Length: 423
Ligand code: ADP
Image (cartoon, rainbow, N blue to C red; front, top):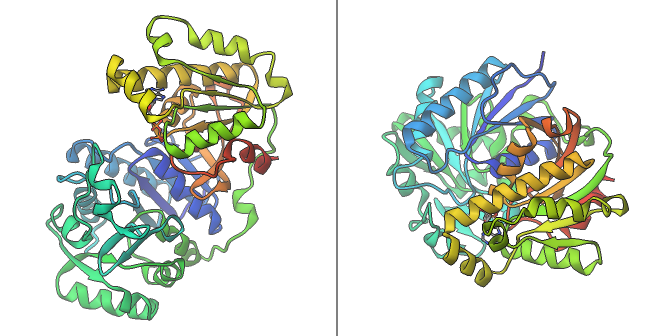
């Protein structure tokens, strides 16, 4: 039986890993599951993060999936539920942050919770209820042009109020700066005034650590990954290197990359400059029917014994646009994801047991292809990106070390540094 105390529900896949990483760094032993598990928890851990893909689906579906996750987490012993969303508060006009928060509050019989995407380590700060990304407001950060969740209002009280029937209030920085008692007093005041959800200011990790004790015993916390650094202490858990301990790494090493972000382009260049073997995948050749997976695996097989290889579809924006123009945006994306996932499965069949995957959607496709249902979270490589360990059907049930890097995370040398961290 596990002694799980904190149950988390994340609205996307790499966001779940980001939250798990912060909990591990604060001392919790954490498992991340891909969707709501069908069986009871087998691992002995302090927290579980259930990764959903509910950010942009219909609110009713997001609510149903989140409630399923909540019930499973409660059945495993969770004393507190943490609903995790993006540090840029990614949501559509209809939700899903407001509707899911409301549904979880109803189900937990809770009349008050907080909401803050603050993640100072990644330059997301909240002041007077306004969300900053680096030095600019959310609606000037590029997020105003996001294809699925354009964020045009930086005032989170207004954004959240538009998504929920509960009254939304603010716990501002003058309160947070005075510490947990001041926050508790302010919460009592807001409750009296009928406020159900309070946006909380935080501009530093110190703010988040001051906030933590005031959240003890709150049935539901909603936040980005930042608030997680202040919660483990409420359960008597302190940072320890034991929390991130994974089984020893063995086997061959490889990197697959389907991300076309600026950071990943730099990481691919950096790996190639080290002189290690790298092979590019051309989406147009896949589309023309060439068995690119077989080609790549035949190329990689004799090289793997000498160290990590890189397989990438990563390309500059102009090249991606040209491919998308010929194949269609979604078709190109899905086709490349399928190919990289098949390559990842083939590499594991060749004996790869340490695999770096770059790209959020690409990671989802690879984890599915490898037959992974849950991952234990290990040491951080760069902010937001830890190594994980999973039993993979593609490895006949053996353990594989995986790291899933969302596009813009990681330093330029991430693809070589990752293996050093594991060694
Ligand atoms: P990120 O985390 O950087 O957003 P994702 O994996 O989530 O990375 O998304 C990248 C998308 O681009 C995927 O759907 C992937 O299949 C697609 N893609 C990758 N390489 C190419 C390419 N060369 N041309 C067109 N689309 C590509």
